[in-house]
Image (cartoon, rainbow over all chains, first blue to last red; front, side, top):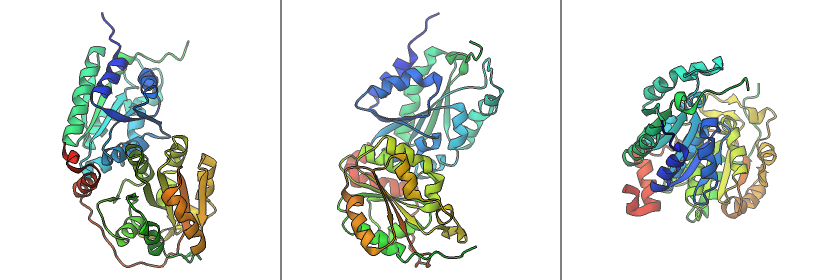
Amino acid sequence: MSHPDWPQQIYEVFKSLDVRQVSYVPDAGHSALIRLCEGDPEMHSVSLTTEEEGVAMSAGAWLGGDRAVLLLQSSGVGNCINMLSLQHEARMPLFMIVTMRGEWGEFNPWQIAMGKSTQAVLEDSGVYVYRADQAEEIAVNVDAGARFAYQTGRSVAVLIGQRVIGTKNFNK
Amino acid sequence: MKEHNTAMLNRRAVVSRLLRDRGDALAISSLGNPTFDLAAAGDCPRNFYLWGAMGGAVMVGLGLAQARPTNRVIVFVGDGEMMMGLGSLATVAVHAVPNLSVVVVDNEHYAETGMQPAHAGRGVDIAAVAKACGFETALLVRTEAELEAAAEDILHAPRPVLAAIKVSTAPQPTALPPRDGPYLRSRFREALLGSDAHR
């Protein structure tokens, strides 16, 4: 079975779509992609104190003509719900990539709540959800989801299943 | 429980004064009175009014400032809004964009919802919080003279600026700007991007 370098592929999609602002609350699943973005002088890479800051920042970026992406973990989706009203009400694009916790082989029971509800609360909030459960599906979902968001002024989240990222090992 | 603060500055006069010499500066306002203050100072395409998204105004400003490095971005927020987004002061300080100013129109109350006392009137010093986060220029403004001195930094300092301006709780005339989000978005983007706003 092949293992594509999906963080590198996502970064290449960002470059092809001229993404200029990337914000994040770190997650182990996003660490390689964050490093790539931090190393790119053409991108503003912004670490946040909480995920909804990135929703608001993405709106400001769009108002100024920049495309933005928010990287977060499923536990952070719940922090964003009211702020999603900004893009929803002004019909502005929002593009998020969510690494999932609390599902495939999870160790930490405190991750389960948002792992279970992430897709439902996003969809209830008007966000279009794409999901990738194999590494080969990630880049195409990111490319399609980002184009959908930027071209139609909608909010899109690509969920990357925990099965792809692997289960965090606390007993090492 | 005190009903009113003792500040003398008038919030509408403060916002109008700061925007008098705005040039090509871009303005964002947080929900409630700051949005009404910005409208009263003169509605224009380079204003973007928030009618919700509480706690997000400063971060909208950061995204905008990063996208438009040649424009000053001034974010007008209430003190209640600022308390909800205190973390964003840390984020702005860490990612110090040189063209972003945060003006806290601070009446120490939640005026819009019944004048409940807010943290800023109960010992929380928002300018000191900004200073602690790393804002080199974090000003507390109580008088006309201090406002005049702060205006230069707010409009032109080559670094992030926060000014907490203590204002009276005196009621102001109604001044409602448009609240249709797509309209506000498109006219703002057209003013900056021309026809590229619709690509």
